[in-house]
Length: 216
Image 1 (cartoon, one colour):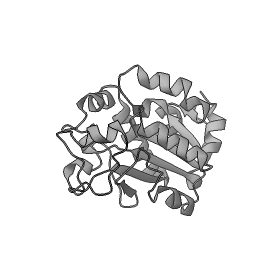
Image 2 (image 1 turned 60 degrees about the vertical axis):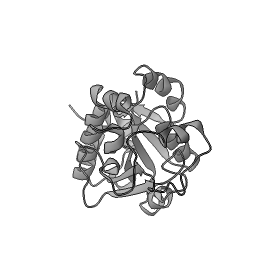
Image 3 (image 1 turned 90 degrees about the vertical axis):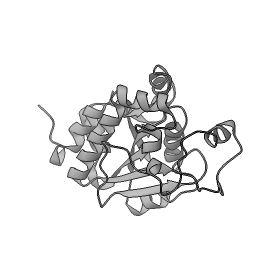
Image 4 (image 1 turned 135 degrees about the horizontal axis):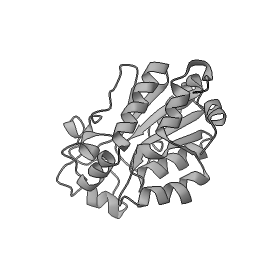
């Protein structure tokens, strides 16, 4: 894990953005299309940790971006070139634009200043969406990546952010995937090679202390 000083240098409020990935009711909510993933996100505390990070970001003036995946009712524009996309199209709960399934899930609170970016296709919130230009316009240098899933969307977000020149911080206990032992393996053997891995408490220690005051 990084030292407090090293992490604090990365997490300057004015140049840091917190990204939540697919933390929506139809994915991690009570009526999820993916109940195993939803259960994992809630049972291991990832969703609660994301809510804590979002609340701290709001308090410290750190920009929050919520990346939501959705589909049109007619399916236009949706990707069909992989087994995953075809399976998603057959799920009993569809992430339809305007439906409750694409609302940011509780207990995460969406503030007026938050940005919500929706995508109709692909695997990553940074490819083919407004996320990258928004980050650049915001002066982002460090992107905190949270959400689901550690199987697909989160690593894609991390790789795309690194490829675009951002420094990425991953709070390991604020992402989730299935099965339960897959997430720590993905973090250790893949994400840790390209991102700074920390805990939610370590990130909060930096975000919640004005001026980077070292915690006692």
